[in-house]
Image 1 (spheres, rainbow, N blue to C red):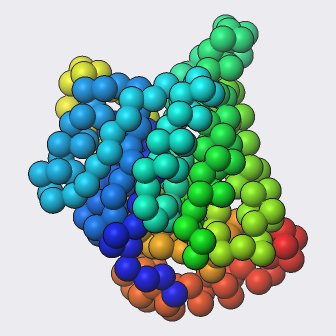
Image 2 (cartoon, one colour; image 1 turned 180 degrees about the vertical axis):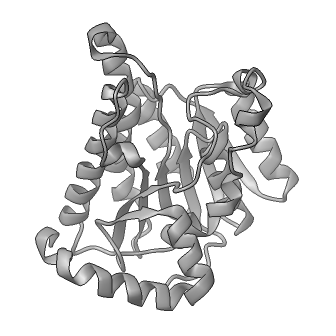
Image 3 (cartoon, rainbow, N blue to C red; image 1 turned 120 degrees about the vertical axis):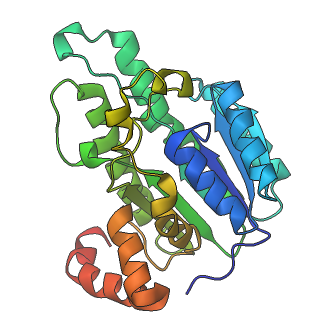
Length: 268
């Protein structure tokens, strides 16, 4: 099903820390050139340095994804610089816990701009620039994409939206060799909005509950290698990683097709 990812290009948003950094490093280890962006320059440079130290090729770009013009500039940078664009990982997200009655319109708009509008813009601009042989769009979601949570109205709205956007785009691309899926970590990792500086203020017992993103890297690598074989689906990264370890990539694909037959007619 999927082939080697070496010598391909991938774009990863929110790669300055946490899950985004882990995914970017995992992709780079396969030999992919990774185009990484974040709004925190020092953290982004740290990711690039880690990738370079492991022998990988990272192209960092500081981007405020809440700004459509900066999203367009990043898409142009990747589209013009990538030799064989294969994968787009829309990972960046912001999360603020605040009651609706205290949530300002500015903060609401900022959350949706980063979490939902930016993935739309990047998918719109970069899917046409994928290699003619196809590729994969991976939209990072959350349990908040299917289950509402008090004090997280903007975040939940954005994640419910990313689930819908993913399925709509999958429908539109069903006749092309392009996969579009969502994935949620399935394990507890560092909260997305915490900077590296803020992490130091978190109690050690809390930090010990966070898992290393490398634990679920196989799920992202498998999705990154798809070219239309599976699309319009939602994955739990922990469960997918365990399935890949237990059954291997080809049998995992067969099982997904079997499980998806009943609901595929609803979407396709």
